[in-house]
Amino acid sequence: MSGRSEGARGAGMTLLELLVVIAIISILMGLLLSAVQRVREAAARLNCQNRLRQLSLALHNYHDTHHSLPPGHRSATHPDRMPFSGWPLSILPYLEQQALYTRAQREYQLQPLPFRPIPHEGLATPLVVFACPSDSRVPGPQISLRTHTNAALLSYLGVSGYDSITQRTGVLYQDSRVRFGDITDGTSNTLMLGERPPSHDFQYGWWYAGTGQRLTGSADMILGVREPNLQVIMTGSPCGPGQYPYRAARGFDDPCGMFHFWSPHTGGANFAFADGRVLFVSYGANEVMPALASRAGGEAVPLPE
Image 1 (cartoon, rainbow, N blue to C red):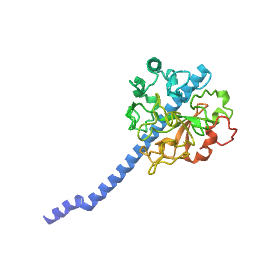
Image 2 (cartoon, rainbow, N blue to C red):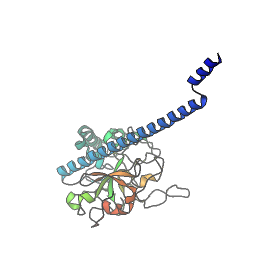
Image 3 (cartoon, one colour):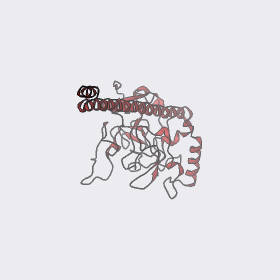
Image 4 (cartoon, helix red, strand yellow):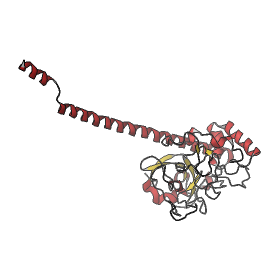
């Protein structure tokens, strides 16, 4: 009997062996989940680039038709009479969204101010092409915390140059009408669009229309590579007056992330150049961003890796 009992114990698994097996399985599962996460993020980043490339192509088609790029943002007095809209609304016909564009024209005729008393329907209409898939907040509209506006969001902003306020050296700024021929630095050396997720409070980053900082469109649909903070700054304000460089934000909840280009991707963000190329630009390129953002500065800088 004792021999059979010892044989049975030898054929079984001790507690220590079981714990070792469980530990190995846990390690393998962790490695597998990490690999799956990396694959998903790589796919999301590629999808994000593809959407940015679609927007770049639409801007090129707009230029072919109108012989200039659209205004980055329209002021209240712009002759198009579509105040506070900008380049995203202008390129709708080139994104197979002619019906939405026609409706926007009709609504602007009926109500020149798109936010009130009855907001334009397009204001809360999300479009997949404007949303980076790495940001789970943007597929649907969000309620802004300050004005309680139900607004559809935008992951990509026009590059206004050094900033959107005083040094509009780029290609998409308020009431701009830049032609490719005006980009004497070369379209392959000049930024046109870049990633920047909507602000943490959803007050900035509306695609249909937005006032931006002090009615300039700043931080809504256009942004400079050294954008200032024009918010009221008091003791305890989380963000200083700036000029904000190209750098990573602390995440979607970072209130200062609205003032500079960044992305949820690791190490940098996607940008579309004026020639239509889309490149991933690392945060290490911060020093050359002012030169890349200017259309006619005469700078000769290497393209960032």
